[in-house]
Length: 237
Image (cartoon, rainbow, N blue to C red; front, side, top):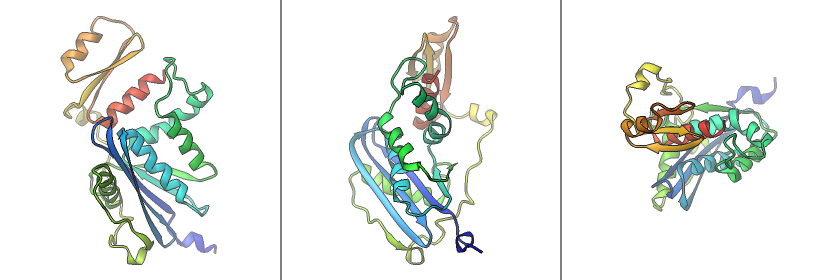
């Protein structure tokens, strides 16, 4: 039997953070390959949360040396939807959306495509701040870099790692039903009228823009990450 089959697949946890959008930001990755742990982190003075999420995934994939299956865990639906649903269409269309706008963060999407080239990657969504140890550690790294605070990054055997249950995904959050999601407090509302996309802080403001007009799209966002996802989704048509 191939000894690789006795081992866990290569696992990556990633997270990004920004203090403002844009604002100072940081990213964190934890890579578990064979019996080694590699923690990574970085910072930019003026960035966005989505750019930091992408940077974390790129850095994690670029660290992989072997050819095992890779499970990349992220709490960014923007990253997962972009790499699994949208990016091929963007490339075909010359990185222009169907609304004739340039794709946001093209430079990082191209780097992510390069980083995953030739790798067998499973993109796995995990709920942020839901008790997933790897995600929590990445969040700690990302926010420390965003706040420009010192943090020790570990590289070495998994046996000596201070987090003993890093691979535990037992607390993974299940996707909420449409009913429960509809009752969640709104972070913002996103509307598209005549292919122009705007965000609104109140439903009344959004409703006033779309009411009585044909061909409009609008949706509630419950987080900054979801707002960015909706904007990207509207923009690709």
